[in-house]
Image (tube, rainbow, N blue to C red):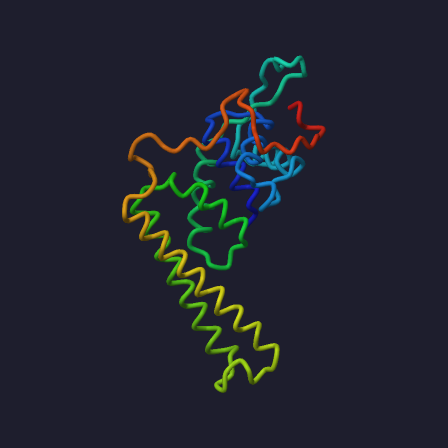
Length: 213
């Protein structure tokens, strides 16, 4: 799975309707350009591709207030919303996702009902435990990983990472079950997007030919 697909769909959905610069601004505000492939070129490419796939609708708008050419605004479709939630659910439950995909899913976890978020995270833990067991069964010698010399450190890393993932996930479940955060259907959500014209303290300032659109 590509993190950029989930990030762009989620950002457009949170705005309701947004142009490429707004989406880029939000992703830079979240720091996604540091921990994912959410660079200007990939953002604009994703918007155009997902519009072709029917996940987004393109709307031509009036010229920008800065005097530039008309921008294209994007609105998420029903199919785009379904795809967005599918990606969130898949990333939350699949242990073998890359860090950027997992991070993107956590960013949108509150779009789900609280009970569903907990259920998905518990499924994630079951997946981690199953993966950990398979490592011990198939890759670690009965005499222990030291039998493989320094190569055994790879298995130790895998086990350590799985244990850390499980511990973090258990902690997140406890916080959610304890009432942390505002989930779907519970009231005013956390506002994680910038308003039109609001200054972004984390903007990179990197230019891209598509920025005017």
